[in-house]
Image: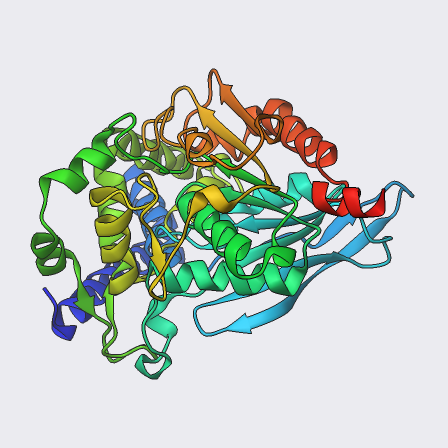
Length: 420
């Protein structure tokens, strides 16, 4: 499974299915076929339309699609996505609302590196951009990164967050969504020891596996059932000759996507069957709910092999964060050294990926943090996606997070004492 031929074979299968869909769609639109109406022609065209779009999206990075924002002055202001700090494996980007006064809240939204692009947080960005200066970690697809750029594992990820926080300054409020929660916690602890003045004001951890064993799920059970050797042998491949990262060892996005969809195969099958029916009836549109969801869901990116394997081994199997044994560049990271960064955890009661209990475990590790700087919230009816996007986020979680940020936006305790 490690050879380039396997990687290229998967891409060939994807490309072939995209071509078959495009061919079926083109044939069904051939004018002469309309002389003898046949419902099978409509079905063929509908199948081709859905198939071509689905397989095409698998290799395209979605656009953020945030072009304007209506401000308090009633005018639509252009939104410009600017790169603040550029690095080989990911950039720090800023959503600059042109012509709007700078907002007092500076928020760093740490996007997960778990198979999808940072654009998965599009709705989260839209909800925060109205009254925050929003910065996002925009991770790159590993297949497009030359081997000469070196490795990228959980320690490198943590150091990237450290660099981003140093770039933004100490008045930053961090919101880490899902997978990066334990590494954002580690990055904050690293700064507490190495560069205290660069620590953020607040840290909000949303649905992250701080302690995967606190409440086991299918995801954590899988990590326990298989050995590292099995994972490396069955999931890791080399990038093929088509991309800049040729030869790099990765966990391919297409392989990740097959795992995602197999977890809810019946639901996805029904969704595509219903979409083909709608397309045949002429009821499908370019931006209907199905296409809006799957245009993002099907867009997957490769992860570096070392990042995926080190995440499984160190975060899930060895529980280095949960047991406060994590190290970065050979130096121990003591979470107990966080003494002035307010920390809030958010969990969804119906989260079947990072179940309730896994994220709130972070508060027990913060032995040096006063109780008044710790907070937690359990959203009753939210699943994994709902805690950072959708109705639960908009109506309940977002206001609580912003209130938490505002309550802890003043100077740090030590600074306040110096002023007094």
